[in-house]
Length: 212
Ligand code: MLT
Image (tube, rainbow, N blue to C red):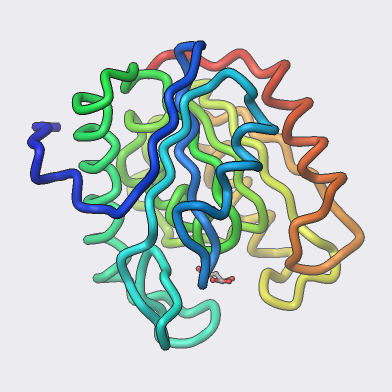
């Protein structure tokens, strides 16, 4: 993908790191570019952190793409915003001189959904992903090629926003695309819990992340 300075369209934070991995931090609805910086530091203490703010506003709350109702996504906007985020990652890599082949997304809720969308639409942009409470952003046809791409997903058995079949369907799509998927279940709802962050940290420290 061509990288041009004007692709750096998201308000964002970039924190450099001492190891070659960059975490792309993607907040939930109503969050911003500062929200997940502490989480990113905790998950990978030496990684660089790239944290954009979603460019869509829903009643003043930043999101990464429009939705028509809770859990019903504006597919046209999702496709456009997914391309925009993929372009931003490439542009940020050239601006900040990090390795575009070693970017791992960490997203929560709406941020996990745009991360899953990038995996499914631009499979070479991410080397791996940590998806906290994702849904199926869209049904890709044909399936992308994600050979060996490691993906950690977490979900809540009592999550009213993400019914269990949606979590299972996303895991199935990613596996059918070649991804190495770990699904972690919590006995809770849509909130991010301490134990799933601990599980993600442990997974990340063991996952062997391929270069894209
Ligand atoms: C949210 O909290 O934003 C929803 O669960 C997911 C979404 O709309 O992307």
